[in-house]
Length: 179
Image: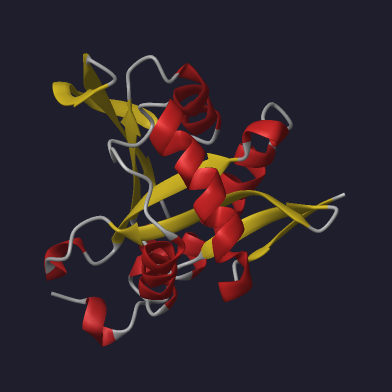
């Protein structure tokens, strides 16, 4: 059975291990060296200090994947736009975990009053991530061609976007979200 839950500090070592795999073996992230557990804990704490979700998928007590939403940009005008990140342990791919994590992330960001969710997908060959996002309503809105270099090749970045919430919900947001 799969449990999707809020990530805790005790999940950070497993999250670090999953992310290290992607840093070392894919262009899904443009990081060149895997961050250590201390850095990953700092990143986890930064997300959790905001009203944004950081989730894990757990199977039989093991962290099988994780996802989080981060502020898309730090400038105040972007405050209702978030960027998603989803990573699944290689042992648990093709089981629908990415879809479960992203669907729950969308639901929670809706509840927080977010307006847009952006996916910045490393590598135009990352069809699994592109299809995952498309399956949950994201549309491709741009390609940044050859903006990263990793594994001896130039890599594109795909930008996808999905609207969140409706006008009625946005009109009921707290005053700090108004112009």
